[in-house]
Length: 198
Image (cartoon, rainbow, N blue to C red; front, side, top):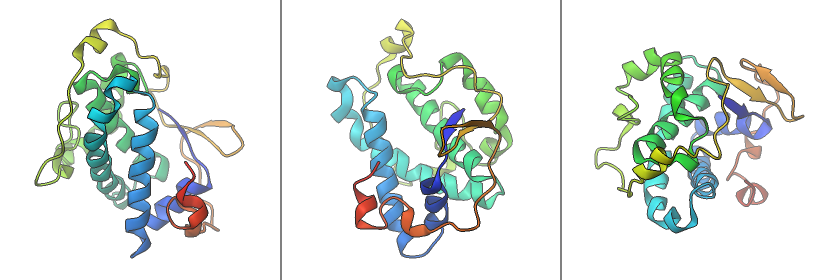
């Protein structure tokens, strides 16, 4: 999958595993992801999906930390959570929100199959053991969107590896090394300036 990676991603990684500020960063990242993906949804469906996405993305923050603890590099840990989201979008028929076409689902799943299997994650059950005990909010499915086959925001051809676009706009295959001088204050939600940034 093609991902961006800049100083804010590295700062978020550090912040999410830091007491006190971790919760603030978690909440901001949930808000950011919900907003970004709702903007890809048809306007008439956005509000019906909001609560589901908020709760879904909150659960994927635990997946992200678990993947880091399992030794995955930052980009791969984040890619795992994006795959969970795309599995969820697929099962709901939310084609316009998918980041890659449906015919690449199995390829992406297989790349992280051992992690997914260890945590009960499947395409049909994208949260697996990270699903909260009380579940998450329901949202209406639109299977007809899958049948129409319009994946207008999907980018094909990146199913074989993680591809990282750096802060200079250069695309690299594989993971980038983590900088030594990461400042957690640059993570979303830590400072007042960052609280309004996407």
